[in-house]
Length: 252
Ligand SMILES: Cc1cc2nc3c(=O)[nH]c(=O)nc-3n(C[C@H](O)[C@H](O)[C@H](O)COP(=O)(O)OP(=O)(O)OC[C@H]3O[C@@H](n4cnc5c(N)ncnc54)[C@H](O)[C@@H]3O)c2cc1C
Image 1 (cartoon, rainbow, N blue to C red):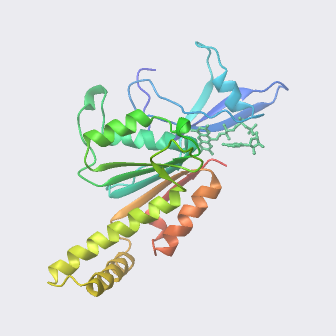
Image 2: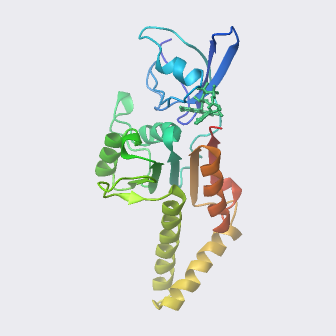
């Protein structure tokens, strides 16, 4: 196959026969943007699991059957400011999104498809060694002022000087800071700048966001295990976000 086309964020279904002769199928997100006939997977070894071990232990040159692309975990059009929230291998589709927005290879290399939208990637793992593609995301952050890489560890040792805690906490601060910023702009336009005016304006901005639906100005894309996805969705619901502003993929 010369080209393999898919939308960033989609997954493939991999099929193989296990030791007992049973056909097994598992989904794996594509961890890259479409690029000729190549793509990446980001697979975590699940202890006692069949397919993750099968893929990871596959000798080079061996063939595995896949079908797809499948799924609707893709960037909504038109692109808005976006928060990507991932834990573990949930980073896979986010890498696809990021490569698509800021292509470095192929005939679109150097193009910027982000249109100046603010993009935050909030990525959580337990330990620093599990922050997959760290160098890549740090580089993109350095090269694009509208891309913000927010990594956080839940079980970091003393030596870690970065952020700690769960992704939902960091995502919430981004949402709050963004609303405050919008409110400050509104209140300065109204010629006032008192704390009260800012607080009123924050509420006004949130009301506008709800009232003017389905015209949204931000989306959150969430990928990982169900507990995390539920926690993040719960927070966004508390902020009054509409369901359509929240796009998610659950691995379990
Ligand atoms: C849309 C979609 C995209 C996915 N993309 C990826 C991806 O990019 N990378 C990736 O590594 N996985 C991904 N997964 C998960 C993947 O499909 C498998 O579930 C995972 O690899 C485990 O399969 P297994 O055959 O090794 O384990 P199984 O034999 O299915 O399970 C063995 C045991 O492990 C538990 N278990 C299953 N999955 C997990 C998990 N993810 N973490 C911890 N425990 C688990 C099960 O409850 C079971 O007890 C995705 C799932 C979905 C639905």
